[in-house]
Length: 367
Image 1 (cartoon, rainbow, N blue to C red):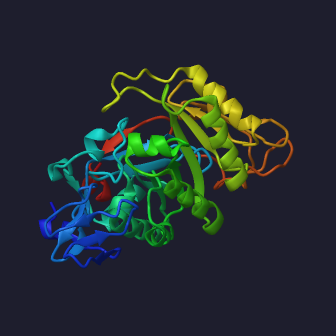
Image 2: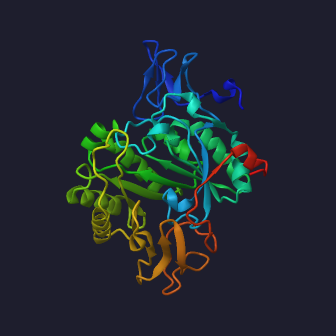
Image 3: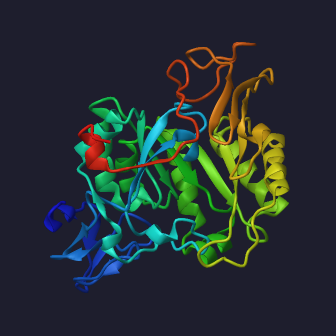
């Protein structure tokens, strides 16, 4: 187990205010803190007159997942990814489906510990192609995630950020220099939803998406969770897909996923399958080439098709791959068109398994 002092590190993105407080500049929440106070995310706080991260090297658990579960359908399909998160979050979504971690105020949630090098070697020993910073948002533990990414890159392991994209411009540039792929959760397409349901602002997320697409080489996919009566109207979905197609381009994969009652929205019904099917159709009608459905059983909506000839390229049943009709560089075997994404030869065969792991044992080849 790590010494407590090893889990507390000084951070870069903050500045002192004239009234004695210190402002955190990682995300647009701009928490202004007195000595000893924590930000909304809980893992960043003021100590010794500066902002520190209090969860470096500590996690709420580790699992090996299919990369499609992030969801990423065009990034190393079929491979496994070592997934982990910490505690806390910089948004306050009423529908959070990882609320036990993201809303935690207790550091004893962080039961497991690992250095960045331990994470990288565990991923390698477990046969993972990548590590994913997920469950809660890696924005709030960016120093740990960036160090882990660097350790992974040193031994051939990629890094994936699963994030809400709620981040300021300068730390955003720093953070994504270390990432290979990202799935951004675009929670809705109205400011009203973001403010009243998530405690944040839409424009900051759109800025992140624009930055990722146009100023980085990071592979980008987007997820939108559709909640009945909240963000699933035809008008809002059309606005969302038209913005993605027009501002980011037709090749960014967009995943529409089903809501299940949780956290503070227990009385909201689950998303009907037809809502996801309609959203996917609207995406395709408005110029998006790769729209997917998620959290429902839909083999058609989960599979990938050639934008040029319509051939089935990657067949998916939940997270498990079936037919594969791409050459080693990602070209359609029927017409030769290139499928956008990151492909390395033939796909992996991890399937739909989810395997909890003890990270230090895995790094030492013991489990």
